[in-house]
Amino acid sequence: MSDFCAQFKVVEERNCPLYSRDNGFILTRQSVEFLPQKSSCLILIREMTGLLVQLLPSMATGFAEYKDEIFTCGGCTGLIKFQLSESPLLIECTENKVDSRAVMSGKIEAILPAELLQVFHMHQKTGRLIMNFADKAARVTFREGGLLAARFEDLDNHEAVYAILSEKKGDFQFVPGLPESLMQAREIGDFMMILMEGLKRMDEED
Image (tube, rainbow, N blue to C red; front, side, top):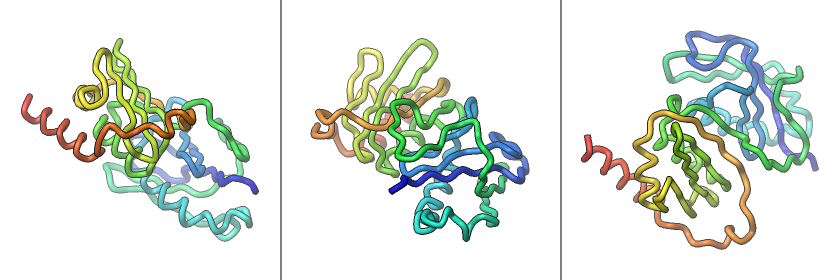
């Protein structure tokens, strides 16, 4: 059976800080993929995750009942309206795609590390979040939203996460999937407890 894959095009834009008319993005079971050089938006990702549940039952008919429907994303300083599109986009949408590359990328300035980590936790993602801050690199490994490992310069696990949270500029990419050996690894701790401790430390430093 073909895997789920739907592509969308922006048909109206009002003061959106990231996207403009005719921009496109793709929704799969595993990710939301944006046009190259377009930052990811946490609000739009949440909207698209809700759409996945709505659209899944109509996959067999090619989303026929939704062809003319207009979807809306708002809640920030701007608003976009978008609909399903059959026009080719500058990103790939294939059946049963195995991703050995990043399926989500963007700028830390658009979504800070604390929010970014929560996205992959809330949506129970499995894979590696790779971040670059100036000349420093960091990596956080998730399994179904849980934290398996973190590394930032010479810091590991909890301390690495705490340091990552204070970064405010850079870029990120998420590469889905893990080797089988890591699928059985133990989590480094409760995600929310680690996050809250990191945020608490940030407040104490300010």
